[in-house]
Length: 305
Image 1 (cartoon, helix red, strand yellow):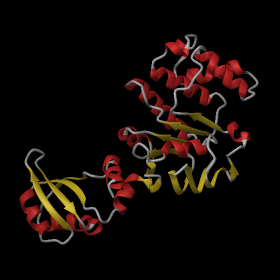
Image 2 (tube, helix red, strand yellow):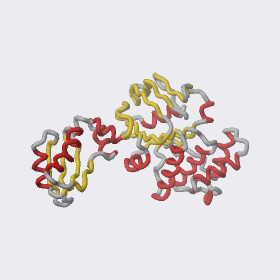
Image 3 (cartoon, rainbow, N blue to C red):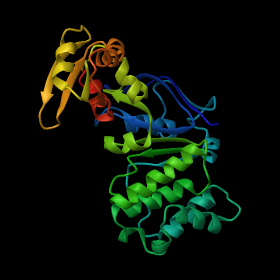
Image 4 (cartoon, rainbow, N blue to C red):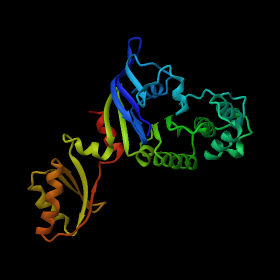
């Protein structure tokens, strides 16, 4: 069970502060790293990968400092966002070279397994400079997996992939997380993160904005009304009863959805009161669904806070 620890880490470039006093722990499973462009995500990943030294604080792998410690690369696989690759090589040659750098006993067999894992056998003997962006991403992924790492760091891994390639990579990352590996990936496509990672780390303007299950984070935002879509056997009577209760701040009748759109300012009070008032008035509840607990809503609230 490998863990990356980030303790009071800052990183600045001249007068620019890219990461500001961040503390977080990345453990087994799949974690999504979110933030607007320029928030500091790539800088954080580069420090976790040992490419950058923290200006202050520490980044560790199971308690061991990562910076200038080549031994950590036995456990870490890295898929950087940058496109820098040896384009004159074939994918097989590229992955074999990385297997040799890791000192694996049978580099050819290890490379073949990694290329099969990312479904690139059909193009493994073509030069990388003939690849699409999505194919290049999968070649980088095979290189990162060739030594069977316990930690995988991926910076925007889905860039350039078509829908089938995305689904295949998402399934692979889910399986790796289920095996107990530590997988961290950044993505600007919120739908991908929502489908893949229940645990998120959010960075905004270089600072750590939130951590955990995004649904739980949403419920902790007590200063934001919670929005619900409710369908019942008598929407008008239910709305009348709810308006009088202090847990709601606004109720609309959505004729298109044939439902009530409710803003609840007291999450606990509303969830307790709604079924009771429906029972007391003989109203059947067909749908009670939060309409702003998606990752997109949470992310929007965090970056505009």
